[in-house]
Image (cartoon, rainbow, N blue to C red; front, top):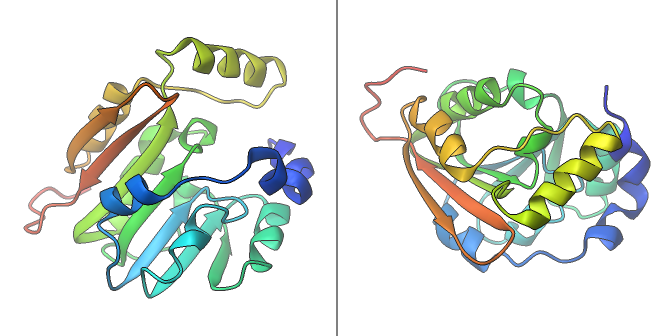
Length: 194
């Protein structure tokens, strides 16, 4: 099991720094009623900023030390687990957020399928992920490979294809930034079963 994040937990927020949330709020259609799941959210450094925009935030991560750090933020419900085996009933979550974490999930297609299944009809899955088509991300991927982090990066269109395969209506937005946003919405009439 990758323990890099267990070691980084006490300094992670200071190491990574602040994260703007305006675009994420727009893609998540916040404020809204319901539950936001921060999948692979670590210390909750991003989702904690949405505490006033949604009724409940559940933070799911496999690193117990990262979840311990999240508890200090208050207003987050930490759940220890892997995204590939989410402990949530089908159609029980209104919004799902994945920031800079998908490349750390061992089985990304299965993780996306589990998240799509957990979404309520009309719910949104927003993935912010470094674009492997960019030189800087290629350097990050190389560093994560040599440090044995087990990361696997995909191009935004490949992530969108995984989401499409789960019945989500998907769009991709890229900018000059290192990351891209892949946004999936579950149709209100969920004829496609995950």
